[in-house]
Length: 381
Image (cartoon, rainbow, N blue to C red):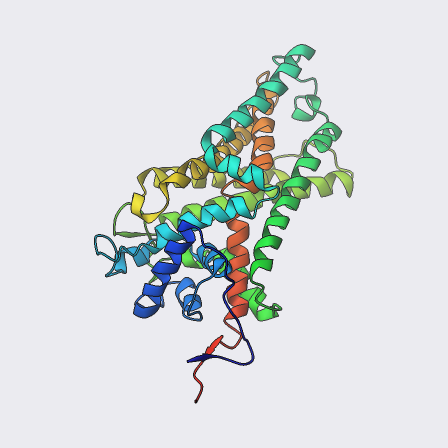
């Protein structure tokens, strides 16, 4: 067996970390067995390689959706002496990629070590700062004159505060995706590859488990709960973003001033998105508490739970803000909600949210790679 002349390739001589060396060891065994080849995209992508370098391992680790199906199907899983545990080995590499591809890098490592504490402390600190500002102005416990939050914090002030934070988060995530993509560029993306990757992202295809029955969570029983709660969070987040976007168009393009009525698009998007985020984040937190330690990296749990908790606080405070509209409680609830939103976006590039960006990039890499000739071909001597 030889590499084809059209796509020559050698594995870079980069010393692998212990976590990446374990993935390389496990994949060599999997490559010989191939029982799980149809489970998800990781295994057919694996079979296109004979060796696994730094870039290959990072790519495959982010292609893994941690569904856990392969662990329960594997004949070499612990307590076998080979101790093959693909989900756990991939998770330990994946969390390193979040920090290593983060921009700037130091903040990624900081969040990974202090996820839950840092996320909630940052949100609480920002909320207290805003409450103190309102208290000094004498408006913290006062009924807003117009009965809405723009009477507490003017629209232009919120734009000045949040636009730079949002732009920074988008830029930092784009830089992380750029670094990840450049590690092993798969070539140009065709329309079919882009469509397939988008489909797999929007459907969360590989959270369906090896046979479409779902993931394994706390035992070997299959459940679609992880997929459904991920869907609730994913589409809830998109709906909240749509609420902000339509509100911006209303304000700047149509010159319609907020607050908007209950039948407006921003209100419908925001309320439905908030409800989905609350349901999804609460469900994922519950599943995370019950997850079998063998199906992931327990050191990652502070980061996972910090992000989930901050999502829940952000969504729940947003729904509460709608409920207290026109009441004296509005300024305090608004300060809590704005603090949570600011904390969420400040930590977004260094939180578990990074997995959605890197995993999307990995799925696109796979959609491109599978349409290209294999690096390995049989050739006559």
